[in-house]
Amino acid sequence: MAARILSVGTAVPATRLSQSVVRDLFAAQEGIDRLASRLIHAAYDQSAIEYRHSVITDLGSGRDGVFIDGTTGEMHAPSTGTRNDVYRREAPALYAGAAADALERAGVAASEVTHIITASCTGFFAPGPDFRLVRDLGIRTTAERYHLGFLGCAAAFPAMRAASRISDAQPDAVVLVVCAELCSLHIRSSRDPEQIVAGAVFADGAGAAIITATPPRVAGPVFEIGEFCTAITSEGESDMEWTIGDEGFEMKLTAEVPRIVGREIRSVVRTLLRGDADPATEVDAWAVHPGGRSVLDRVQGGLELSDEAMDVSRSVLRDYGNMSSATVLFILQRILADDALSDGAGVAGMAFGPGLTVEAARFTRRVVEASAPAL
Image (cartoon, rainbow, N blue to C red; front, side, top):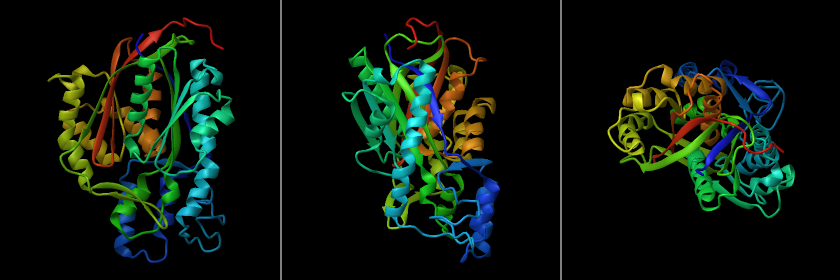
């Protein structure tokens, strides 16, 4: 039996930030001149984002904290070590929350998980998130664990690909995939246009999936996993970078990224569809990672897709912002729950990572009957 995604779970921090509140906070910082203020307002107001979640509770609250002076409203510049301490403290709960949600939706007990694949590019510690999932959720200590680090926004697809390969090789495997990102830990006050854009779009969240070739426990929709495709674009290596600095991780995201994606996306999708099939008619639902509004615009234009085809990706961007690798799982969760899609609907997913790397996959949405009792 082919590998399936039985369920998708998600989790976000409790702090929900209005885009306008964060915009005004950044625009009010010392050293922000008139030009930088205009850039900040443009980046935030044109982002197509309304809300984002963050583990930084002092953002927008006016309270004193690691990142904000509660008296003056001035943003601190914590060291990378201090930021990573927050990651170590806050990330495990997000990993566990998304994983528990996915397990419950699939009717799978934590003790049945045989493999764990985690992914993140916004913090590191050891024993890491994979270890904490075993300890915190009651997964058997013999479960195999793998971590994909620093693959950026595209990491969910390599993680799901590895889970699919494991399921193909071991038909009784039950693989838990969890992507968790705390992007807001690396915000900073800046007049640099690239840093302004990064501050305007990135957010925190976690997504998880249960992947297995074993029979489903719960009746309802699942994704049959099809082909995966990966490609490095002919240019863009220096246009999307993610490096470790002394005051947090530093994102380089130039204005060329949407243009490169728009120009090369059709050839990637042609490879994924194995021919010259029209993407607009071959695929019933699209899960496109919303690296930003302009990225979605370029993908839509490059593939000649309808506004409706981009609705789910745009709605996740609007409600959550760009949560890096976790974001596409939020989109897949909404598509999986969409009862307007018929049995056998074709789904295409894609995301874009440093390099510039494009990761893509095909899924088929099936509605199945439970063939094993939920535990």
